[in-house]
Amino acid sequence: MTDNKTTPGVSRYHRVSKEGLERLDKQLARGVKISHPVLAQWIKRYGDSARKIIRKYELHSSEFD
Image (cartoon, rainbow, N blue to C red; front, side, top):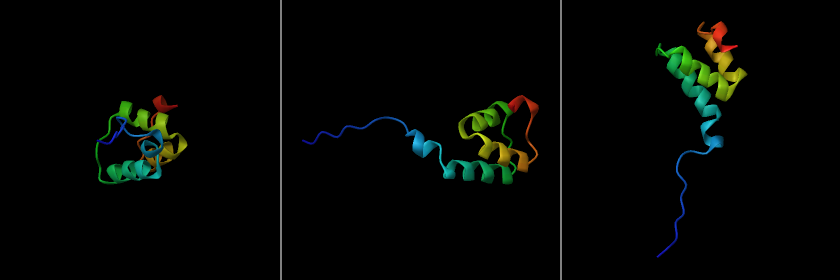
């Protein structure tokens, strides 16, 4: 029997990636309504890259600063 040790969840490297930002951009382009607290989480996780995408769709708020 082999010892397959797995760890739960997704690594930060895979979670915070270009694909994540592309997913945010696609969602906003489709007009998906994302709440301000969730947009704030995107900015917290991805920083200025997410802020730029959010501004592109005119969804930036002063509460994100």
